[in-house]
Image (tube, rainbow, N blue to C red; front, side, top):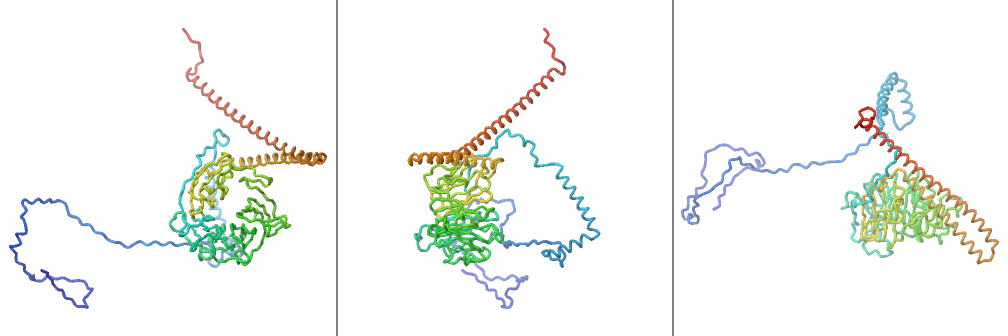
Amino acid sequence: MEIVYVYTKKRSEFGRQCNFSDRIAELHVDIPPDDSLLQNFIERNPIDIGIQSVQEMSEHEVNTERFETSVRGVNHTEGGWPKDINPSEVEQVTRYRKKVEKEEGYVSAIQELGTMMEHCIKQNNAIDIYEDYFEDLDLAQDWSPAASAKTINVFRDPSEVKRTATYISWYPDGPRKLAVAYCNLRFQSSPPGTSMDSYIWDVENPNKPEMVIKPVSPLVCLEYNPKDSHVLIGGCYNGQIAFWDTRKSCQPMELSPVEQSHREPAYKALWIQSKTGTECFSTSTDGQVLWWDIRKMGEPTDRMYLDKKQESHNAQGAYCLEYEPTLPTKFMAGTEQGSIISCNRKAKTLTDKIAAIFTGHTGPIWSEDIRESSIIWTKQYSSYLTDGCWSPLRPSVFYITKMDGTLDVWDIIFKQNSPALSLQVCDVPLHSLRINESGKWIATGSEDGTTTLLELSESLYTQARNERSLVTSIFERETRREKILDARHREIRLKERAKTAGSKHEADEDVEKEDSTNFIDEDLYSKAESNFFSIIEEERRKWSATDEKIEDVGRMSADSNHQEKTNGYPECPDKD
């Protein structure tokens, strides 16, 4: 049976508060008991009921309003000036300063502030908290833990068709972001639908890129501007050079014309140390080095071919490019043939633009004084080397990536026959490598588009006290050794040439010239050897003097203990 009671209310009273009042009780329905229903139930006897003597509580859940946060920026400017004074105007500022200096209270205020400042300076000078009390004692060698590295994050290519991470660039204002260029370098092997996008990653968020860079052609390289962290320069697979401003758009702000650009992929683009911070230069396997100004990308500001005679059809194609910021006109290029070309942009003649060519790339460390061979080389690897870089803080440490997915860390002071650390980063070939300016983090890019961020141990980015001088001495020693060996080889070749040609007289004159050069080099070698043994002898004397001091201290302590045992009285012979 269904019981329904209808409440009626006027439409105008909808939404108003309900007001209840007392009234006489009314009976709406009366249901008499049905005795036949007792047959459906069984009496329960006895009945056991548990009762708690505590107050019953109820639980309620309430949804509160969500607290919204917002980020606001504040622009701090120079303050303290009157409203009618513009701090950027030098004349107004100078005039106002002269006016204040003539006021009566200026001298007294300066004297009062000067007294307080003098008191603080005297407090700081009272004790030198950075004083090294044992600087002259070098009794123990500097201890450093073993080299190690651990993976911090892994950034994978978001596109369905995986591409190679060809280039990595760190954010200039701290290790917070990574710009990674993605491109398939196998000519005409990209399947249809391959993405051309590159990405900027937040190092703490590997799930989604912070920004997408959209070029007109896949990017081979991508580099942050060290003077403006919002501007990036990129080299495209079709040879064009473009730049982006991350504050404005993900599309390129300006692009170099195809007819003025490289004819092959632009493998390297670097910013140049300039006053404007808008100049850069690039290279490609077409053998050209082009200089650009992003304010005018219509044509390059300068052009150079990697050939002695500056002929385009004989130029060697370049894969990598590097220069010293203190010497922006001099740079070095690495070619497809394995040669290293030292160039000078501002040379007087065309032939002088190629200063030197180091052929036969068999070693990682070269000297500008020797062009025939490297001064230090690694062991023969079973897999190809793909990239390498020096440590920004430790002059003896450099890093190498290989085709087997291994990252090798070399420390030439620690050992030169094998790497100090060999780390298997992934199972696919590593293609790119970039270390942060702090030397603590290093990023590697692989062939399947995976970028791995590694944190290095403290020993790999903490420079020892005399490390720079030790590395310099090693390089000078190896350079002298190579010079002596080279002179000896030249002498042997001249003798053999003289025997075959039968011109003994001419050969003797050449040998005399070579002997004079060889004598000078051997004299340098003997001088270096004598300096080395003199340093060893000086260290031995220092250690022996330290041992004598320690023995004197031990002897004095023994005498004092003996005096205490005799209680201040002189020793007397034993009595029976």
